[in-house]
Image (cartoon, rainbow, N blue to C red):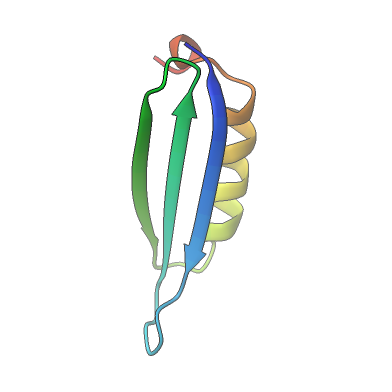
Length: 64
């Protein structure tokens, strides 16, 4: 199984002090999944960038 697409949404609702990160992963076998993370330290965008870079070229078995 290979990851075929990653979509990341970084959001900060009006009046909120935290950012919320949503991620969708699609695979070549038609399986998709969503995830969510909250950043209270303000570094969420950096963490997500590194995570996407790691996942982009990995197979699911590499991450197990």
